Image 1 (spheres, one colour):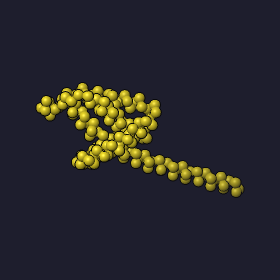
Image 2 (cartoon, helix red, strand yellow):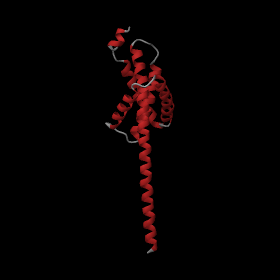
Image 3 (cartoon, rainbow, N blue to C red):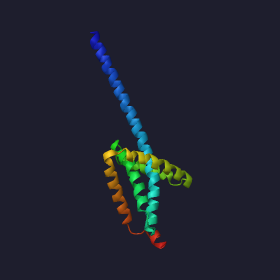
Image 4 (tube, helix red, strand yellow):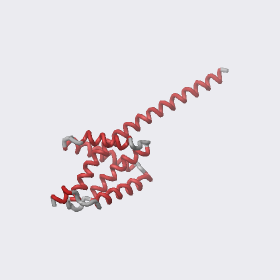
Length: 157
């Protein structure tokens, strides 16, 4: 009798530990999703600025554009692997973008510097997924650079 009660108590304790572990993992994932959205939005501002400069005719920016695009995709890809999906992921990115829209340049640069370091670690830890991040980043950059110049870009030439 006592053996059955001890077994039940052990099973209950293991279930509680498992649920607590899942809750902690969910909280950690949520924190990662928030940071990934914040960083992807910040790096996207710089990415789009590089695209605009390229469309205005500035040469030699492809390596910088590819690098920041790769780092952004590293964060987005890791969030996806942890379970973040659209439309929530897109909504989080839009919210982070809107929040950062009017930030002072110094605040933006400080965040991007932090995010680049963090995203590089995410990329370095991606293992076999690096090829997917690289491929997606290259396709995005190719698409950006094949776009026609915007009217504002054409007017400034």
